[in-house]
Image (tube, rainbow, N blue to C red):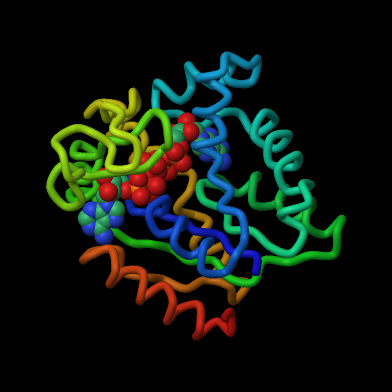
Length: 218
Ligand code: AP5
């Protein structure tokens, strides 16, 4: 299964991708997580990406394509993958086609998770995550059992640097101008399934499962 999850920042792509990838037994390839990992380990790519991420802008395509090509060439992605956060603009989508055509592969479906901007701002302002295991929480809709501590390892939860209000607005602007055109791009190819992302996490997961079944992916 080769799947793309599209959606604005905070739409729940990461939350849902973890579940879908586990169900299908494919790697969850999240370019944002990969960039944060590179940034935190101080690699050259991470240092270059940091300023773009902190401003809420897209990291340049040439950096992203090298990162993605390397990740998809690993053995665990040979039978499928779930892309979360890539592609982010039309040139990345075209480059992805090129990478996949070299190994005679194709995308099976694209899920677009729709959430209105007002809810995005609320979701992102309440997001906290564990700096050690990466588990994601929300202060009201998905709180940890003990205030501010990760359920899995007890680490103090943190707010992402790019989750400050002004950066969130820039990320939303970038989504509308650069990423949203991908919805028409994949609809034209008959790959797009639109899913309402508002409602409990389990319900959104069921909608995604139904959409995938409708696309013949099971
Ligand atoms: P990235 O990490 O991909 O960020 P994003 O797309 O902005 O998405 P988020 O991680 O913010 O949100 P999400 O949709 O995964 O939501 P989540 O599940 O966490 O990218 C970060 C940066 O890296 C970019 O700005 C860019 O600089 C760079 N970058 C990454 N990829 C790139 C690329 N391809 N090209 C160039 N640059 C790139 O949920 C959010 C919150 O809501 C959580 O608290 C969660 O608990 C809660 N929640 C989830 N579902 C629900 C629900 N149904 N109801 C209520 N709350 C919910």
